[in-house]
Length: 321
Image (cartoon, rainbow, N blue to C red; front, top):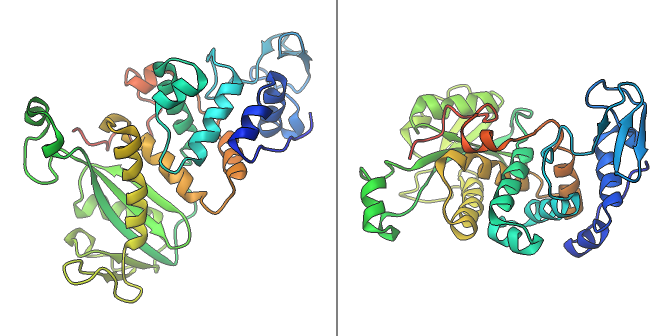
């Protein structure tokens, strides 16, 4: 199978992926070298395509397999035409797309749409990358509902203290003009925040933070502090890049998703981080990069709902709100 060109717009994606065979050819070209199917059981490349079933039969182990095996699509009864259109939407909508909207657009149930979107977010998790360097901004933010917007019963159950207590904390590190790293942390004390900086930032880089005491002691970096009680910008000293990312994140959480459980918060971070880090590419390229990352990332319902939490990369640091 020859590589196929990715659609550039949602309208093109809907038309292009309306043919099931085209969906298989598109994904096979991304998943396997030269589009040559590889058996997931014995890893043999000797496979015959069954055009009547849109599957392959391995000529070595005699087993049949589909394009979905070993991906986020595995065991899903939803066709690739709907999957790929949903992936195009979530990859390119800056504020995200809700499960209710996906359910209406694809004519599936809201529960199926929510499961689908969570699996796509699982594919958006890029893991570790090269250490950030140059000019770095570090900041943290709180995620959680405002007490004044809650019903009295819910307020009494969820608000047990003052200020940031009972809110999830997210730490962010941004390389100006480059990638951002964001992760849920259990606290904004020095041990948690500085551990993230030392793990993901190259020593000797220039780091800009606010006046939070937890950032004191970063002696291996060129550390500059902006006092937000006085000014938000002092030459190159500011954290406005991270504030921009927090704005995008909260616009999606508050405006599109409305209510996100802390248990799933890191998945929504992965979604926003993916889009932000691919912001310099086209919609088509961003969609292709997302499709290229679905292999080897199967997510079951039990893993998603917490009965089996082996898929969570930071399960030990999610705040209990």
